Amino acid sequence: MDLKKIFLKDACPTQIGGQAIMEGIMMKGENRTAIAMRLPDDRIYLRTEKNKKRGKLSKIPIVRGVVVFINSLVTGTGTLMKSAEILERFTEEDPAENSKFEKWVSDNFSMEKAWNILLVLTVILSLLFTVVVFVLFPTAAVNWLGRFTDSVILLNLVEGVFRIVLFVAYVLLISKMEDIKRVFQYHGAEHKTIHCLEKSLELTPENAQQFYTLHPRCGTSFLVFVMVISLIVFSLMGWPNLLIRLLSRILLIPVVAGLSYELLRWAGRSNNLLVEILSMPGLYLQKITTKEPDDKMLEVAIVAVKAVLVDDDAPLVEGISDLEGNIITNKEDLDEFKRTDKSGNKESE
Image (cartoon, rainbow, N blue to C red; front, side, top):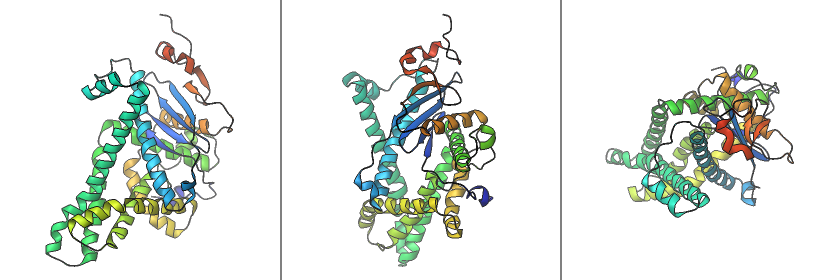
């Protein structure tokens, strides 16, 4: 790993950041967010929307980390669900039958309410899975060690290490799935494109390909910071009985998230030996969560970046885009998308 290709000299860090989604990328800029996706027919779908104004809580250290974490979870989950919906809309094959629950929701609620219900339930289930598997299970699993040692340091260290190993094993396991592999490729495309932008090079697949798929401001690094900081913070609580430990782990989640965000924020704006050392675990984990993208994936990432590099008063867009982020088939023609060719001209029926 050549750190000089990750902590780029003379680079201009940007506030633009993104997330890989199904066959595409969500990119968030200063004033708007863009979704760019490669459709099954090889065209690029692009949609932009205004960012919500930040509240007063987003300016308070530690607290802002919790706010960002919750917003990212909701937005990220919603964007992933939306990308799957878009792909299904433009897939020629018949979509899979909805589950009984999905059918009940759609039959009893409006489209918007049904979407919100599914989003809320998905976020809740995701949170429950994360808290149970990566927060509560590790402390319960190593509870038996208390019979053999009274060392609070050793007990918390074993719990923390087990939590990290469990998380890495989970990431390795899902990385074997074909759909996740492609998401990780788009994750790599996002990082390469951001590197290219921060190095002030022309945004082209050729220029972007020269960079690593690893980036110091990645959300993967945030998750590693969470694991390490949780080990330190949880250790301060000692090693009380199991019930108190479980409750303390849950109550301290906002503190851990807030501290981790501040650490990632500082690391993203700094460039020194200490930052490089602290970033190493996250960078090594990124070797799993990012894969080398092809040029077509980079084209999608570049379209997403260009879509947020516009003036604040630029109009919002939705439709089929060319490689420069220009809409060639407008939102009004959404119903005609499947009957148009790549150039935007209607095919004869």
